[in-house]
Image (cartoon, rainbow over all chains, first blue to last red; front, side, top):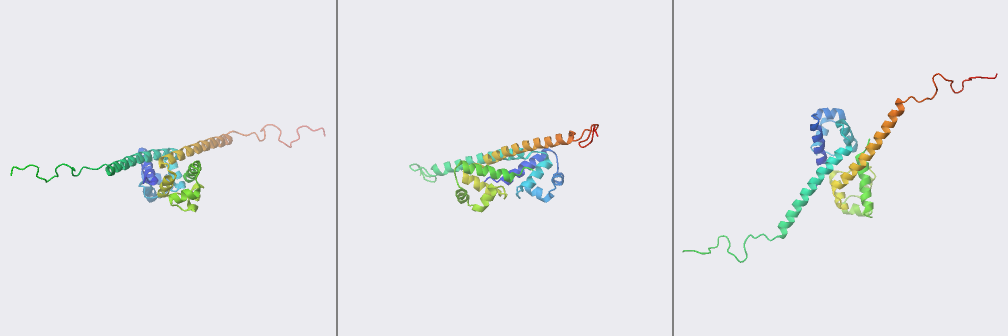
Length: 114
Length: 114
């Protein structure tokens, strides 16, 4: 399951670091506690819509841009998950030759000089 | 302030109605209570990331697509707000001629036959 809050946190952290700002600076500008904003960046807490607007304003980045970046990041994960599911399906439907039906098994003595 | 939950609710409702499905159907498929999903669509409750994933799955629309639509809707509101702020600034910086400085005021007797 792709979780919105995890990718939102990553996008917000990337934006902040791109601007060379500390958590403390953004927390002061957004009037959000340092602990809370840190949990949001790590995807551990959901940000309320009001809080998200405050953080965007503190970062001076439009909410639409943040959401567009999150959408792109989510799309990448969705694609990766689709490939993983396809691989798993292929593995479960393809018979894996652990032992050939008509051939010798590992450990069988095929020809022995003895 | 542009609130994420309000535009998310609008996008989710539009998607559901586009599919001709009732709140009851999506609520059953997403295993979310009818009241809760209805509040989310009306932008009155924040949806947790898990719940959002469930609703997207019930609607059979990728989360990335929902977020992209929300981003577009947010961008439109941001543009409209920017225009409104510009208009308000123009109004407050332009001197509005309520009474001409050197002319007669409304109610002044400029010339009287009396």
